[in-house]
Image 1: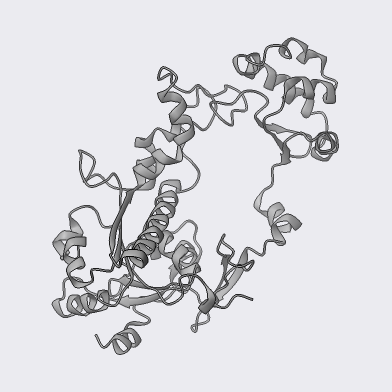
Image 2 (image 1 turned 135 degrees about the horizontal axis):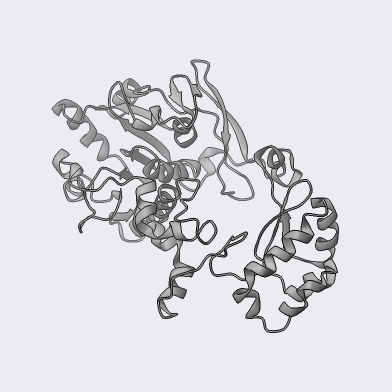
Length: 386
């Protein structure tokens, strides 16, 4: 079993001055790889995501989303408007390896903790910044919120069927991808520091991450006469992929079918009505709605298991569409051991996910739940003599 001290980032100190999802997601990844993460929170209220409820469920006074993204971290309460607290924080920064912040552009400068100022305190610090739309331009002062960033990124025109209007992703993908991008940049900054002894300022934004998320299809658009993508009008799953790519309803559930020659499906399904679409491969794109409707009509007549027994032996790229109940009961999920229960001294116990990364064949495991606001303030002040 891999002990925390064996993990790649063991011994590194990360200060997380960020709130909500994007920055805390980046520091969660570093924490899962062994870094010690101290959240810098406002006394009393703390991170605003403590009250960002996805449902009416709270645990220990905080939202489940806060617990999910801040498990295993420590909390230091700091009043950034208090000169003594700010002095303590600057002293702690001198001992840190990484600092992450996602204040709106201009705020961190007013506080006096921008990169250039902090660099004078700790030249070896790797400093990470996440914004909504970068540090310049007309959108800088607009709210850097996930749905709004999705709206500006073009990504909403890739999901749903043609004619649906813009369809947002059902997750905060801008936050998550920006956090993942920042984590990659921070790791690169740590490598640079190890090689040259110098710190770095790593920056990204929700918009930049969402544009990068679309790199495949955006590259097609840029090099194909700037033709706008056209979603399928029926069972659309990808604006740029031809039939049969999509999700189809069977008697007792749904089945997803990816890239497969129409002629293969015609033969396996005994569906002669597909004959006109089996010649020119381009037809499977230009006539994809008609093809999908024929497939949907046939698939509706059998169960998911019936079709899987036909498709899988023939190496058709397909899968049953699982809900969370089905996923958690499946052997394919359980063998990965991706869930854990984290706890806290005040009887807080929450089941959540584990790191998606394995190190030397082992998935890191941490037993500590997300902290209470300022839970570790006294201990941190004593340890670092702040």
